[in-house]
Length: 170
Image (tube, rainbow, N blue to C red):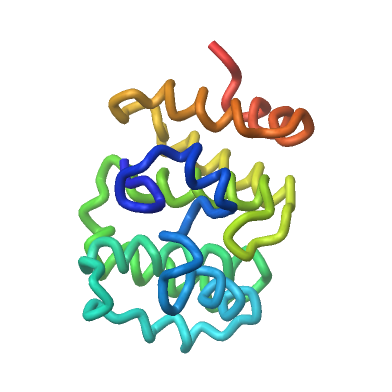
């Protein structure tokens, strides 16, 4: 599993107000890309640059997340671009849907908490958490249950109710 900052636990990211992105110090920030995606500026998403220090696979996952955000805000072209991305990028080899599951899990939490420049939106959160669950995320990840427990511990009661509609406690 890729944590949002390359290795630290989700709890430190949640406390700092970001889930999906490497944090507010990245340039351009996920928040800036998310604002473009929400506005339907899909051309801006193509400026993702491998020279910025990310590997192609990470950029493909980032593009998938941002296109998903654009689709969430009614930009139909984003759905077509997601299909293209799943066919013609490193995500083509995501047979176990590990990367897709992680992306939807992170987006679900970001919408649930109103983090990463995304509005708090229980319906969008629920939809992404359902997609993550359909991908079996994080059940086929080592210590997946502890990731769920860590997320639960940081959610408010209303947020936890939405989360547990999808990820029921064991």
